[in-house]
Length: 339
Image (cartoon, rainbow, N blue to C red; front, side, top):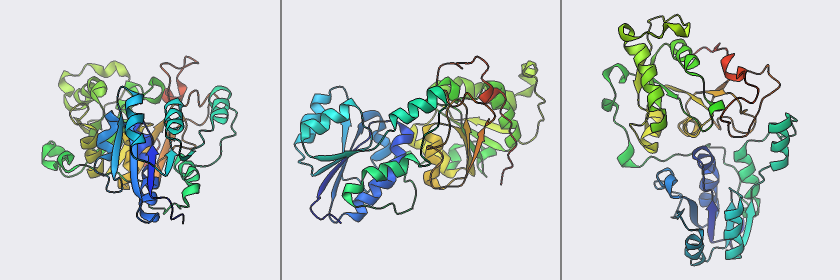
């Protein structure tokens, strides 16, 4: 153990899932380096993800001006910078502070070959473990305890806030994602919800609220629903929908996931956060693939179409299918069984 390291800065600006994946490193740095003062730097919009983390001594936020942030960080006199983002702005910070640092390997060339030509040289190594590789100079080791997510007390959702139909248990379904090719088409969402056959809470941001309303209406108001042109057999079983999209903030949405029985979700941050609560996760994959980004440290099942040679078509989602058929989602078969 390096005893000279007393003040460490971890940088990860975005996004939700990536910040959640840094949590094991945060915990291990704090617990394994004696008397360390641990600081964390992220974008201001992700403050709620970290403000309640007991392993972080001080938070720093990137807002509008990188120069202001650098001036703030210079005053701290860090011994070491652990760069878990690795971009131009983190390079500027490291150069300006002039202290020892290490950045994680983004595997840019290998990911480019994989997403553009489906040539797979990617290692069988989760991004969390690559973060730990970057922390080797700190002599810390992965404690194997998985992800953390600490919900501020004010954001804990009371079960009584949900409809009575969901207060005895529900499945959480994270319906959004960044990138159209990460999201099931509406017809497939309906098919999935019908297959789940239990009370479901739909989770997402304001941008997902309209889709959530349509799903809720489909299942909860059959007499008003003209959607049989979808070609579905609506079975009128136990699927009851509560659309929480846009009604709760990020940590409140995490609280809904924490209280759920299990979680379905696309390749997006809140789906990955479910692992911090040891939830069984059914993760849905379209244009992206789960090779380094599957649910970490929890039991999970992958819902993906593995019969295509055009996946992955991107590392973080596209605005449309480059082949025009979107078979990765349209031909997805829901053959799972809920434990």
